[in-house]
Length: 334
Image (cartoon, rainbow, N blue to C red; front, side, top):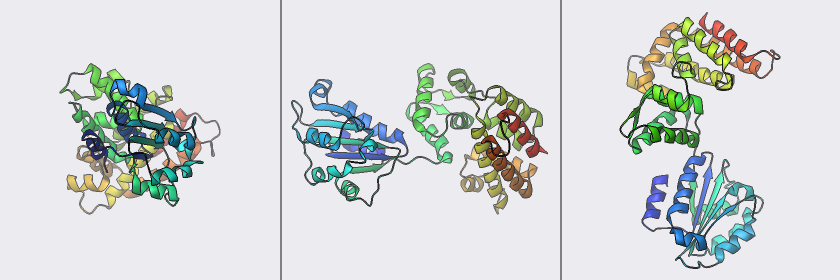
């Protein structure tokens, strides 16, 4: 089931006795859990028939004892167990409750950042008797599209470059991205197209000195611009960690290697599909492909791996990351 399916079912009053929400992406778990916490009971009922427990503070026997009691004033009670992954040592005790769950209790487990061992009997039972929802992390190339859909739901549009800036600065953790976008929703009127300038002004990501612009400068062999960006990175290392820059450049040149192997490089839709990128960025790969033949791209991927090792102290003890980046850039461009 999707997040939308689950929430729509709840809206219709089709509440299940148990929701076991697990996976690497906490955002979708929180969306479902928060909806149940905020909407199933009225404010007056919550004080008597809703409780939030934490896996590190309770054991499974206590959770089951609470789940078996009857609601006090509402038609049902809601129990939400956060950090349920901390209950892994006693999770098997849930088996007996699964055989006969209390129909007037909605029990929600938030089992984050881990996948349950589905070979265990308790998880096999959960898969059959509960809403057993896996919250999967999105691939890097899927996040910009998710951002586009997310802002659209809130009545905004966003430029492709703006989405890319968010991903490259914040990573792929959706909760972080949604939090930063919420700041923009406060200051920008509905219907606004979120621009790189808006990102820079309200979130603090430079529209000119970021990994996206560095990648573009390298792809076009704009030596002056590339050097300006890495000098800015060297002066602001906390906001521009070397490991992130190396990772993004490695992804770019790996895709460029795939680009060289494509049979039809003149079809933007085919290229975008093969590389899993927004069609808006296909021209970047076309330009970079002309500037970096396949052999050079292979060499650059090797240089990036070497720089990654050096950044971790292998073969370059105490070398400043700014110097490592300057050395890497020189080797890439020459």
